[in-house]
Image (cartoon, rainbow, N blue to C red; front, side):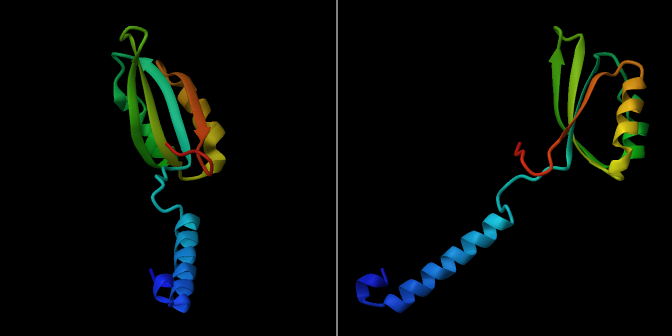
Length: 119
């Protein structure tokens, strides 16, 4: 609109400002859902108590957000998916071993979600 009224300076300045705003918002990943660092996935029998995992979660995670619970094997098992943030990332192998040793927990998977996954 500014070009149509021969205000080329205004048009140039507004274009430059818009480019800077778009670059800043892109750099900040504005509008992108940013979960935590890892996705935790495991299966349990349908009748297992949730309290079994609570002490382990409190020991290793700063934050754990439940993303999904799905029924598997005709309702006999439940598959849990969490977005998690570790207190200390050096303890990840120990956490996976401890979770795998819990009675009833099966297929414990930990997937990184650091820079390249949007969910």
